Image (cartoon, rainbow over all chains, first blue to last red; front, side, top):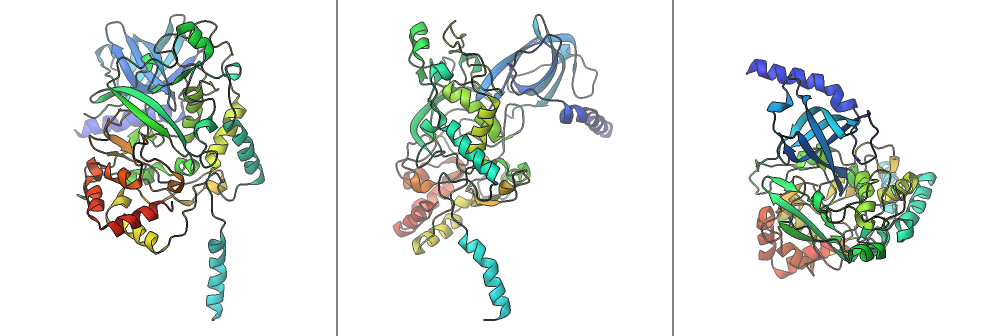
Amino acid sequence: MQSRSRAVAFSAILLLPVATNAPVDRHPQTDPQPGASYTYQGTVRAFAAKTGSLELITGVGMALRIVQVSVAPAAHAGGGTAARLAGLEFKPGDVVRVECHRTGAGLVADRIEKIAVPKP
Amino acid sequence: MTRQRVAALFLLLPAGCAKPVKPGDPVPGLTRDQRDRFARGKVVFDSTFTPATGLGPLFNSTGCGECHEDPAAGGRGDEIEVHATAFHAPACDPLVQEGGPVVQQHTTPALKQALGIDSEPFPPSATARAHRTSPVVFGRGLLDLVPDSAILSYADPDDRNHDGIRGRPARSLDGRIGRFGRKALVPTLREFNAGAFPTETGVTDPEQPTEENIGGKPIPPGVDPLAEPEITQEALALADDFVRFLGAPTPAKLGKDGRRGRDLFSQIGCASCHIPTLRTGASPIAALAYREFPAYTDLLLHDMGAELADICLGSATPRDFRTEPLLDLRDAKTFLHDGQAATLEQAVERHGGEAAGVRDRFKALPVADRNAIVAFLKSL
């Protein structure tokens, strides 16, 4: 238990610069440039593990929009672990932070961090 | 009179002589430059948009001032909006894929010609519909600066003090503490204002430069030819400053009944959620920093019972509502989020859920005491 707490604390420290310094794009529809990196933080609308398709609800105020991100198998889960996304599940309502880059096929996730899950 | 008493009198004079903030007034103490921005922002706020200047293709109003107008710019309006979402516990779907939670009631002539619709189609997946009045936006710049820590200090989600009140902070879609909107989805005033342009008028801005889809379908070609964003960053910033600088109206001086009503308001428990005074935190705008102001809210979500329940939004369930700030009640003609209460007594009587106990205590009061509470509320 103690070592798990330590691991969580350590990963929290590792993530801290990401959480505090990285810009979060709160208006995702700004015509992203190919190759550029983007960070989105929002609520999961849908996730299809088989196709690796993640739909995220973000927005500004009440002007909400959907961001579609492809989750490549190599993308790493946040939390400081080396877990691969293949084993992860995202449910509607989960709050996640996605670091991704633009390709010709759209946004591709490089890293996803689960921030919170909805309470039953 | 002793020298100390004379000194105390002089110290108290400025407070006693402070000019009251009337509805629509800016907060006292703005610099000349800030007053200038307030005046220029009011022009943007009162602007009327047309399709040629960005209106639509879906919209609820032609400008901010069309709905926020009574008794002054930034006040309330008599328009009723339609909102819709789908609640699949524990998650809330704001139905962005079907046009989003705000169902716009008007279309531009070009959209009507293209699709033959007068309003946005009601989302077919919605599990609930809600009606929303346009509230006053006075004092919102002050609410924006109430520290998260202050909001959290009022939260009691497990009802540890056994008073039946279980306030909890709302969370935005990205997990921050929400405070704006009837379900407190939006964490900052800037985001609320930047989102209001496209949502309410269909005018895109640099912070939300994408038009909403039409019930989930793309905008037909040629219907919205103006390039995005449809207003400049400066216009958005001016409108934001106008709203930010609107003061919280000073409550009117109380008579004997009003003072008794104020005491009863606290005694029966209204003030457990409608916290009378909040204090702002740090701000580069000195006139807004570290100010106590009449707020009458805790900015938390509360379960208001089955009768008031309508839509979910963000972390708010259908039964949850953010405690409404009680500002400028003196000018209100209808009450509650949906405008369905014709009097303040009706508004109190429709409170349920966590507020059921307080409501029952109100109803059990002698008529004179109930009238005293109403007299107090009408001073706000």
